[in-house]
Image (tube, rainbow, N blue to C red; front, top):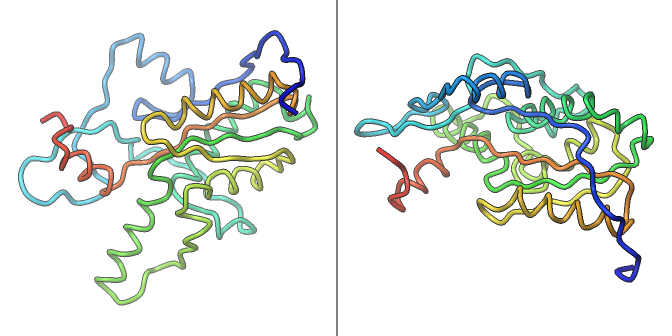
Length: 212
């Protein structure tokens, strides 16, 4: 319960990164130290009218492994990117072996798998039938990535999703740290996962929050 004494601290043992600067912590660190930027017009979708505003989009030429066939119902662009980041973090930390996969997972996300849903919608409007089935609950809803990563890595601890707009990942980290300190579980993985989508792009644009 909440009356358990808290541990003195929480240690971060591994990090995985996928961003517009590239895949992997090393690539991102090198780009940041060199002052490189990766802002460009979006290529994941067509921008109607006017000059598109630049965005920090994960490069389309970066390849991400699809989830295995048994997890096809969870497969999405966001899940693939999340799996790459998680794999790097787990490999660098050794926590899977140390804790026997009894690891909690806290995910911070806002748009979740909405980009894939948008693709299916456009295909449906154009052809009357999307090219692949879309599982709304397991590929789109906010908790979809947490379920996908729990199954993909065989995690046996609890998982939760925090969706509080731009503070989602920060709140997921706070929640995980508090629960580890309270002794609820030995270790936790914290994942921030969002991909560019039309909803986000046009939503921020309508609020006048996109820099020209």
